[in-house]
Each structure stands twice: as structure tokens, then as C-alpha cells.
Image (cartoon, rainbow, N blue to C red; front, top):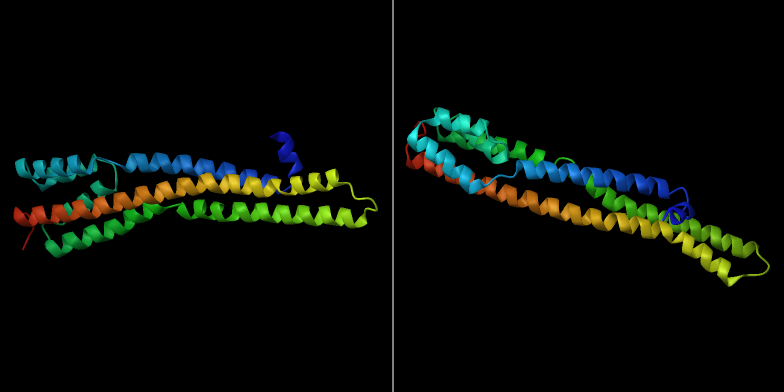
Length: 205
């Protein structure tokens, strides 16, 4: 692998940098999404049970002790129950936009690596092919093994670029799917909370 890396030329270094950055980002993003994920059903039941047995203030305290975007939405809505339904709904919508920004933060960089890595690989291959054909043009006696070797070396950067982009695309698709599912749950259980507050007459008129 080290021999192939050296043969690939100087563009292998930025490709290696993209790979390291992509892997580091994927690990951090995976850890962040895992920490942000909670059992939405259990949390909703816990909040409603607290509201049933105690009061809104204690339910807010439960939200403060729970991590994740859903607890932030519930916290924002419950804090405004005394001001009326429109304030509750607006607070939840505003907080949802903020939390969505947090969930999607940094995804653009992973998408950039997916796009740039293959292009760098193709650039290296084109450069290598130019050098190979230039060598052929200057040579009086073409040796097939040397030509094949030059072309093989030129293709190393394309291989490396694709080898980086493919796993990064898998990570990206996983993160997008995870965020989408979390957003759907946030919307669903936020609506359930609002309906519960209306049903139990816990929102100011």
C-alpha cells in the first residue's frame, strides 16, 4: 500500500487528507447522533405522566435533565403554556428549526469530500496519462510493459478517490436517513404534546 501511495504522486497526499478528515467527521457525527437519540415514546410518556401527577414546572425540569432535540422542543413549548397555544406552537417551531440546524451541522463537509475526492483522483489520472503519452511520444522504441506500467500508476489516484468517496457516501446516506427519522419523530411527538395540553386544558386561553 505504501508503494502504491508513493507511485500515485503528490495528489495522493490531499486524498489522504480528505480520507482522514472524512473518517474523523463520520466518527464525531455518529457519536453526536447517538447521543441525541432517545426513546421518543418513553420520553413522551414520562412527560405526560409528570404533567398528570404533578405540574408543568416539573415536566420542564424533566426536559432539562434529558438530552436530545425532542426534549428541547418539549422544553420550549412547555415554558410558554401560560401565554397561550399560539405561543406554544411558535416556540416549538422555532426550536425545531434550531435543532434541525444542529442535526445537519457539518453534513456539507462530508458531501464536499464525496464530490472532491473522485475529482482529485481523475485529475491525477489525467496528469499521469499526459506524462505517459508524452514519454511515448519522445521514445523511439515503445516498450509495452513500460507504457502499461505508466498507465497503471496513473489510475492509482482514480482508484484512491473512488475508494474514499464510496464509504463516505455510505456514511452520508446513513446520517441523512438518521436525521430524517429524528425529524419525523420530533414533529410527531411535538404534535402529540400540543394535543395533550389542549385536551387536558393546560394551555392558557
